[in-house]
Every structure is written in C-alpha cells, then in structure tokens.
Amino acid sequence: MTFLGFDYGTLNIGVAIGQTITQSARPLDTVIVRDSVPAWDAIDKLVAEWQPDGFVVGLPFSTEGEDTPMCDQARRFGKSLERRYQLPVFWVDESLTTKAALVALRSQGASRDKLIRERDRVAAQLILETFLHEPRPYDSQP
Image (cartoon, rainbow, N blue to C red; front, side, top):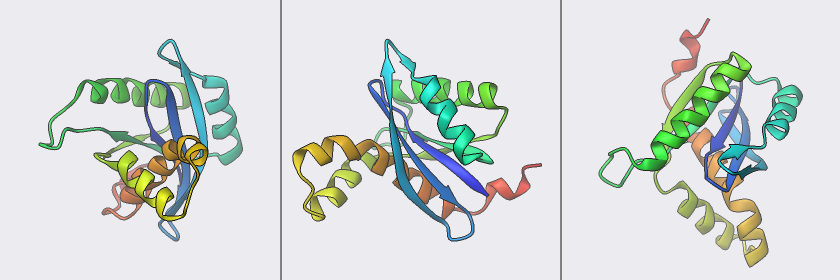
C-alpha cells in the first residue's frame, strides 16, 4: 500500500510518499497555504500521480500529550482530504518532528536555504515512517 504523509502548517504543508512493503518513506514536496487554504491543485496533482491508498496526517500534540490549537487545524485539513479524495486518513503524533527534521538536515551539512526548503517535507517523511512502523491499522481497511 502507498500513503501520502502530511506535516500540516499554516504557511506550508510538507508532503512525503511511503509504502508498506519496505516501511519506508521519502520527502516529496511542500504545498503552500494561503489565507488558511492549502494549494489544493498541487495536492490534486500529487494524488493523481501517486494514487495513494490513504493519507497520514501529523497531529502536533503538546509535550504533555494534549491537543494544541494546531491539532484542530490539522484535523480539519485531514477531514478535507478524506472528503475530497474519498480515501482513509490516519493520524500520528508528530510532536517534535520538525525539530528532528532540522537536526537530520543539519547533520547532513544542509545550508540555511536547504533547511528552510526541506524541513517540512522531511518532517512529513518522519511522520509517515512513524506510521509505517506502527502495528498495521491500514490492514483492516476495506
């Protein structure tokens, strides 16, 4: 099965692609958000190209594991994905993935420009890899 993973943000949404055979993911793209509206045309193209079986959206819980205001926005985005494409959405705790993405990019010697350009899509990769390494909730999907 193939999944698109999303790191939702109010300015950018990182996107990654992954699959269950190798339980691996890779960074794919960054989608711009303008006036709280994602660039749906860009997401439409990714969905058409990759034909995913579902989506994984990160929920940015607090360090205490509680909802944050961004959790509500990420949930709205995920529900929009589900309605728009008629595919299941799975949720992953994405606490600190952006920081982990920055650490990974810095360890590769990434320039400041590359850090800014790549951090959201690498965070989406980490979210998707977390999902792919969990017990397989997607196996029970019709």
